[in-house]
Length: 153
Image (cartoon, rainbow, N blue to C red; front, side, top):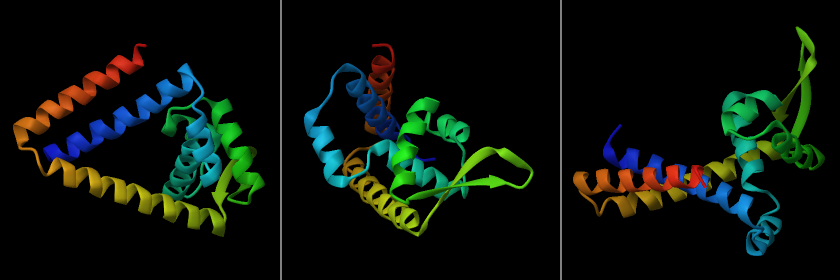
């Protein structure tokens, strides 16, 4: 992996930790209004993306992949099920465990999410084109330090 990719990974990690920290600290009305306007939370979009990648997933695998609690996954999945983005299924060899699959609408939402991620990625890479390797190493160190700071507050 080149230094630009390392910097991008560090930036994405910082943003995720920043959002988690903000949610814990206070409710952001603008964020809620934006989520209502888009109709999906970031967590719900990441659930859809994870299921698209894996083919199907259960609460445990989603919780582990997304580093979220099982109750947070359950809450997010409930709305996705209600709006026919996901459907429940069970495997032949394990009738107890519930898995989720994407519906056609879920597949469309996953594609939209992928496009938005790709646009953001390209935007960040264009910005990072302005820095040399030494500068990118400094950016990576800085963002990792910010992320660690957020984890401990």
